Length: 177
Image (cartoon, rainbow, N blue to C red; front, side, top):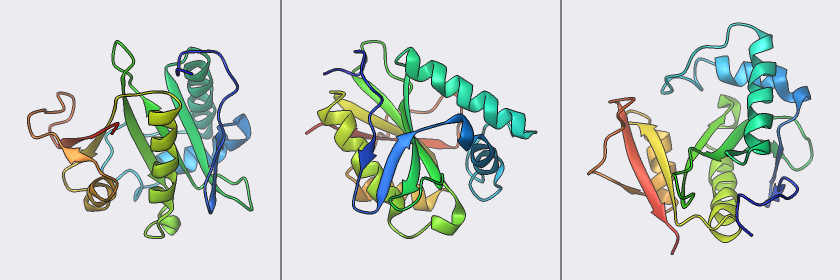
């Protein structure tokens, strides 16, 4: 199955986590995540001003899922559906063989291996279900935790490429072996 076919949005499950579809009921948590100073320390994106921005984000993601331009999962612990972070595959190249991974997690869940677990589930889906040939990650050169996460999970820095939209970003790539 390719990622452009029509099917039910995939829920991913790991040892401790459930990665599920984003719902409108998550909009307040999305707003909190996207306005958290620690979470956004290394991310250049417009700052959400009101909780309505959380609802608008959910609507944009729903549209992206419907037109097969994004997979975005809510990261939650198995025992509760509460959003603790998000992880996505998006920004597909023209022939849909390469995707970009993006992720964020509330600070109280940092350094617990949660993002490694979520990333492994998404990489498995991206390579084995959606059939991407490569998955890229753009991360700020000062974001040591993100760089460590990527290297630990088999991503290699692509020193020959630059992020034209953000000079502070470095690009990592993981090939489907």
